Amino acid sequence: MTTGTLSPDHVALVRSALGLPNRRRQSYRNHFVDATHPDWEAMVAAGLATVRRSTEPDGPHTYRLTRAGAEAALLPGETLNLDHFPHLEGGLS
Image (cartoon, rainbow, N blue to C red; front, side):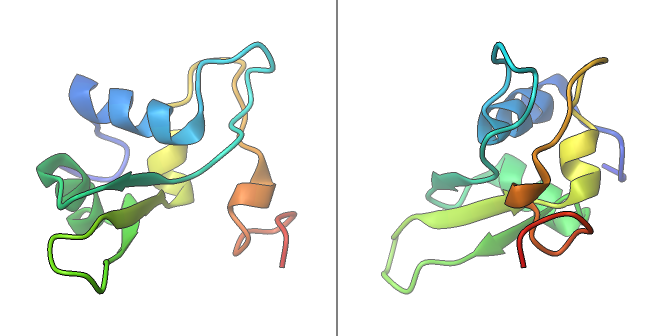
């Protein structure tokens, strides 16, 4: 997998993490909490997501998308809420 190339399964995970689809056509979150997940781990390895690992054995991890990962799954007319990408210009600091 390369940046900008997501499988249909990855697109579904990314859109779920962003809270899409919705009536506003804008993301309202940027996280996915799960045990180690092979698809998310592949996106982390490709630079499309980051992970904060649980300190508990077999505990849930929090996966967050990079801007590239999030934008790869947007449909025409959809936007990102930059408040959920604090490291980007226009996001919360």
